[in-house]
Image 1 (cartoon, rainbow, N blue to C red):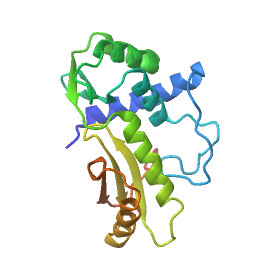
Image 2 (cartoon, rainbow, N blue to C red):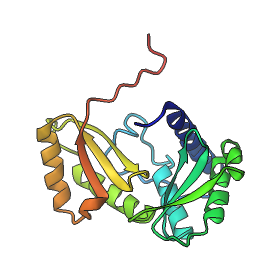
Image 3 (cartoon, rainbow, N blue to C red):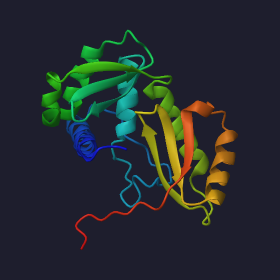
Image 4 (cartoon, rainbow, N blue to C red):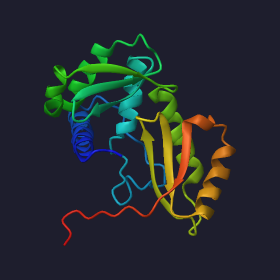
Length: 197
């Protein structure tokens, strides 16, 4: 089970990274694709920064980079990599830069490299290919979310019921995405209770 502290730190880091990337203007912008995954539904824009693309670009600079995570409560910065000889300190510096002020505590955090099978470029390519295959989808398909799961080194998709899941599995199987790079699960709908009663 993910600890609440990790979720808060990860959410703050993700938002800070997107804001920092937007402010620097250094990163590629997501093009409008005509479909809206749940993570951008209602706010899709041709000018929106895609944090997944930012991390895929980081993987180009540091081959093998597969993502990062924080070990709560120890505060360890985990660099996930398919290359055991990755320049972990270089990746740390790049993450601190991307996170701007929110990443300063990472300069002195304990650091460890965790093994991964797929680098972030591969995961991001699979993610985009999968999303292209499932969006748009029939009205009866009950999609919940999609995510690049750095901790488990795979793309994760969630649907509300078995029929929707089976439809997605069939679409994905035709793509040739490595089976270990994707998991399709059943999940209840995600609720957004921001500021609710």
